[in-house]
Length: 441
Image (cartoon, rainbow, N blue to C red; front, side, top):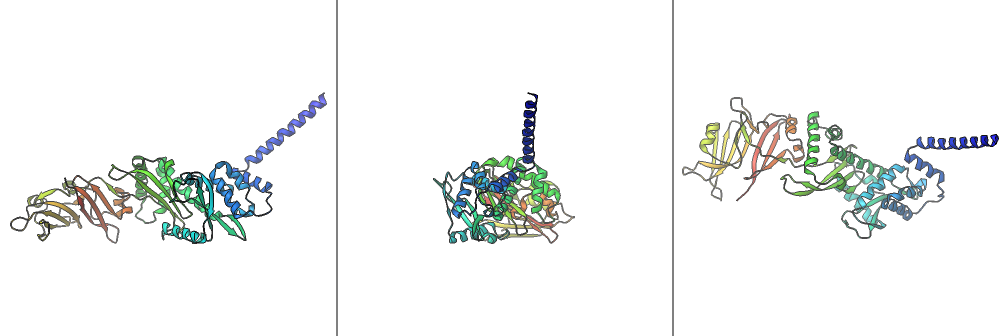
């Protein structure tokens, strides 16, 4: 009896040790290493599979996450093109998210040679000259998914295969770089969602090489982005629609954002490009539009575009003009009045007086183009002035560089824009605030 118990105990110890050894081995491998190890150990494929079968395996992996491991393990090693299970899983997962809006996958088709050529040409055109060209992938074969009832035919969902040494394979480099690009822009959205200013700065900084983008400007941009998405974007991050999934271009559509007026819901796009220097660049374009800007003397607001002023009002502020021009030749019977002072130009529109000058007129535009210490300091809103550095301007309007340094706003009187010019040292040399259109009651 004692001997039998000892034998059973020894057997149990051996089993326990075997289990512990197995667990130790498993924990020493990552999940992708486990799958790849199993794949290599039990791969019974002695012959290459056809391109139709390879495309089918990828299609079913895209169709359901439950099929990913089986599809991967069914592809012979030499037809994986070195693609790891992790990349294969991510690639199919991203394509699945893109595919779901189309409907239920029913089959697939290979693009013709002409369609393939057009696909890569269109991809380069869409990405633009500043992005890496897709020419290095132009020998790949694109496969398009077909759906039972496609709800988004204008944006087909496609994946790539390659032909190497007579065998059809996965397109490892294409897929890996596309996944890298997708992960980068996804990280951008996550930093915004988490209100992680420091993390967002680390993404923005490599895109901004010019020395005007000092650290405080980058911080201002990051803060602006977080505030914008928090207050102006109605769609959740899960609702963003992936429109383009390429190694050199990722494009998302944000279905619902509040426009600059705060009154309308619009859709907008956010794009990621892989530039020719290999750096990712995210194009999240904003129109610099916001609150009304007024003209100030010595920090005090004195003039607003769209309002009417008398000749006496202006002389009280500036004295006699250095130059006065009154043009009565306008077809609408209104005189165009230009008044130049030291560093300031005012443009009015109004009815001419009996002596062909003017008495009262509406202010159309204001320009400040110089600063003279002997005259009151001319600014807009007390913080925008001639001589300020472009970096200082970006601290006031963090996204104005994306709209060619044009800022717009709307009032009850109309729409106005403010434009900036710079000298060789990147200092503001002129600011013009002018009327774009007027509102009539």
